[in-house]
Amino acid sequence: MKTVAIIQARMGSTRLPNKVIKTLCDRTVLSHVIDRVKNCNRLDQIVVATTTLPQDDAIVQEAQLCGVNWFRGNETNVLERYYLTAKEYQADTIMRITSDCPLLDIEIIEQLLSYFQEENNMGLGIDYLSNTLRRSFPIGLDAEVFTSNALERAYDYATKDYEKEHVTPYIYQHPDLFSLHNLSNDDDLSHYRWTLDTPEDYELIKIIYENLYPENSLFGMDEILSFLENKPHLTKINGNVKQKQLGE
View 1 (cartoon, rainbow, N blue to C red):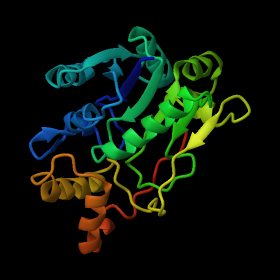
View 2 (tube, rainbow, N blue to C red):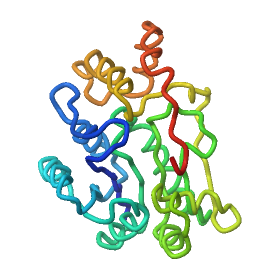
View 3 (spheres, one colour):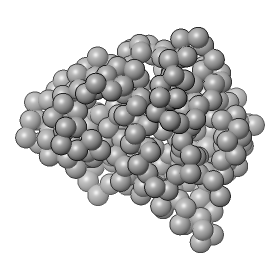
């Protein structure tokens, strides 16, 4: 059974254009995301899924520099892009990662994959697992794992624009059709915003990287929490940023 991480990335962004090639400690955001995913031992392959737009040639170039595969597909129908990427690379299990999460925690994605693989090996039949169905982790540590069969059914039956843009809503909004599971954190940390979508987000993440990256390039959630507990004023930098909702 082949497990593939598909990282969606494009240059276009309504609130922060070119965000995935902005730099953090002299490396691009996308390269940091790829590097973190590379350190997950339960993956067989990593693919960056971008668009066919000329501006996204830069995404392909970055994927090549990082030594990972790439696929180009529809800009707005990201569900189709994922489906075709999974087909091209013969994935049985897909981990969905977005390139605007440079603080992604390796331990969390390892936990997700371990739970998904081990429970399915015992015949539990999980179709979809994430840490966002009932959010308890900081925004920006998001990851989803699902079967190729679930992805194909979503591709075949999703009709709404937001279902096609956000890849998995058709799956997690149909608990009658799919077996859905959630990974929860012991403490509710969902009030933290560590994703990259605005200039304020970038300012905060840049500070976090400048302070933690030199000591440990793969620093995780616990190190970030300790750093912010000593400097609580930093969370105000992007404290007023509203998380975009489905369809926005």
